[in-house]
Length: 231
Ligand code: DC
Image (cartoon, rainbow, N blue to C red):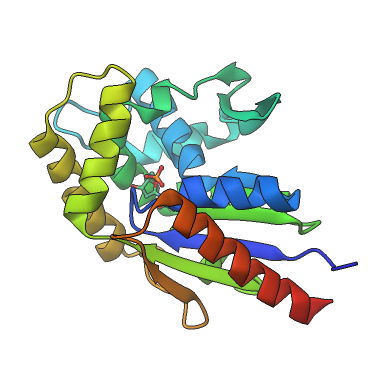
């Protein structure tokens, strides 16, 4: 039998990494963790506690003080996984455009990153985990046996995000979504603390012109070849 490994899937926002990571975890019987959901839940907490000013500035000092009071976790309902914030299911709220537009500055705060990285490492202690995010292969699990770095053009990523939001009945314009994708790329790649970058040992995937099924197949093939070498 194969020994369990850690699978790190990083990449740009809306690059399709969560869909692919979730599916792989299900197929191979691993735990899936969406680390972006954890940053989103902390952002929602900051919004609800008045720590994000009308101009978008985050009260980093106050948020740092409040970190011990923030518990982010996941709960399962059948096949579906829901993010919880202090025991409350916040899965829908954390996907709103409001949270999306405030999450990058919150994720740039070093104390927030340290707290979440600690939680993420604890989740991976027993391996058998697929985690997606921005710094999983570089910071959280630099020793991960399998690393993937995903990208797609900003236009394509905005189209995917727009469809997703419209399907959920959100009234957003495509230009708004595209602007959000571009702005998040800028903040995620230029922040001082753990900027988004490709780990030197990650396998790169540009999925601009791939279907979801093609991506799933590509990822499963990669897993099979890596897990085969670990056996
Ligand atoms: O993957 P996502 O769009 O749900 O991520 C939300 C935000 O959180 C994104 O702007 C970058 C940040 N993030 C991060 O800094 N590090 C991670 N490991 C995951 C997400």
